[in-house]
Image (cartoon, rainbow, N blue to C red; front, top):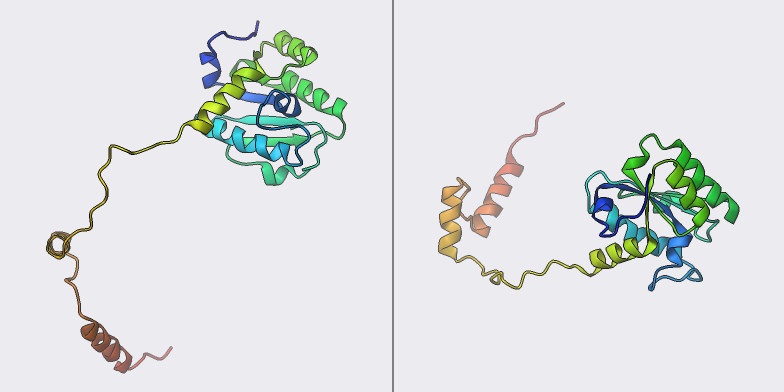
Length: 192
């Protein structure tokens, strides 16, 4: 049946069903007492979702102060807020049971009762710590371009060369532009 994988590589290809507040309890940089804890988590989950094309992340929160999942949905992440703490677990269990292809999903929680249901339905379980590590890597990896040369502006000769090469009009003086605009204004306008 499903289970955790030691190196975590199997999870890279999967969609995630996340027990939101359970995961937040495992995160060093977000606290359950933060007024925007759900928002902070979703911003990190969006990076995870967009790291693999087509990945879906469904996150279920216990009733949240934020409370507006529509504004948190997007970039591969769908949020659901339960009405009471018991409802979040119930919602997650219902989703596990209704998942058409449980082997394509990984449950992210430390809740033993939910994990047991996931195992019964063949859904893998990704430890909270593994997803926290993945989010930390994606947050800390910034593309830096130290090897690139600084951009140097083109000379007038180079610009003229490219204008000719690309069949663009040669540079026009301000006086010529004003003259062209004046002539355009003098042309009679067609009636409709």
